Length: 209
Image 1: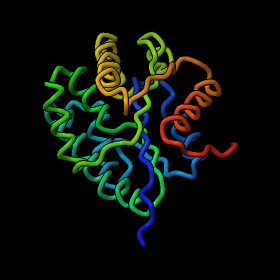
Image 2 (image 1 turned 180 degrees about the horizontal axis):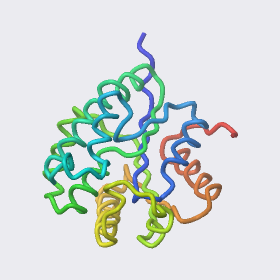
Image 3 (image 1 turned 135 degrees about the vertical axis):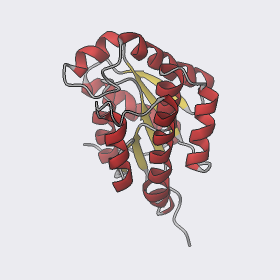
């Protein structure tokens, strides 16, 4: 008898919103697999370098950037996410399709629906059970990023504002699957809000940390 499919939870949000920290906390509490995009497969690690390195000779154009993100996601789903879920273990991911829509769609100015269609092709029908957006202002994003930033993080403030708008628009369009939490609060407060949301929406039991 096949095991019950694991749950797929995704954290989205602007840079500096605290996603990585909360992914680790929640994955530990659930006994789930923590993962990230881009870069959590051997192929993805190479794509991540191409996507984020500040090197004019290999900097991708707008559509190339979207295609590379989709390639990373396809590999990530096929090699990591789908097999783990099929084995009955839950997965908590730092970014998924919503990031492509927000960054390459709203941020870069590509058609968000075209970007979404590309991502849907890449994931072969896989959708998260819950998407948690940790929302922070552009001012908080820039302050938390500091001075050492990758190519995308180094974009102008207006870009980061468009990205934030993209995440909030997606959450507004799909309130049953998406939820928005204030990412500017302290780590413990955000963590408690995340746990309460996961228990309410998915009925999962949170193990005391």
